[in-house]
Image (tube, rainbow, N blue to C red; front, side, top):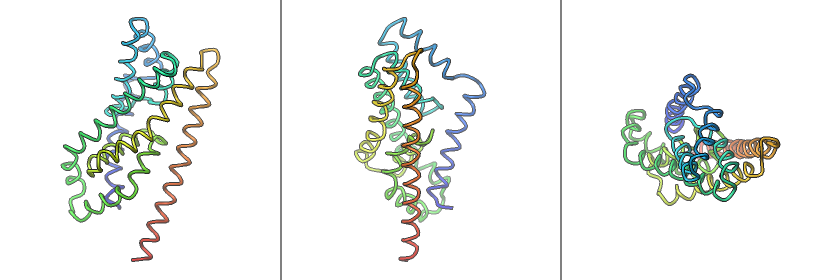
Length: 224
């Protein structure tokens, strides 16, 4: 098994376990998030914005329905403030994931991939495909957190990571919050259409990346 795939599976297992834990315990749900946001809005707009940032940031550690939170952010705060708040939350999550993995990730890497040559190959593979993986990571839940951690672990240059994470997160947040801002309880159609469209576009892009990576791997095998 490719060392990169092996490491991705380990990280995916960890993040998936938080998702299962959240589902089983009911600590966080869409209904609870909506109630929390309504309560925060009744207290203060800044409290509402802070709660949205905390929810999106906490997605790095526990499973949070990011797209839903962004849509609700646009609904409660309006497009501009909802987008700014959502962008702050996801950027903090990504940068924190990168930094933590950059500092502590090598221990995990050496524990999972013991062969130094395989670790080197892992880094080369992520250098080749990492940028696209980050940009289109929002096609799959937990993949953004995985790519952020892999970026820090493999010591991807921070500015390169920041560029890819920004390209991945900012347009996504802007579109999601806009759909929330033009939706209502009586007319939730814009939010629903946006959620379906964003997922379909990201899934298509992710499928294309996988096909291209397989073709590149076959070509490398032939050349060698």
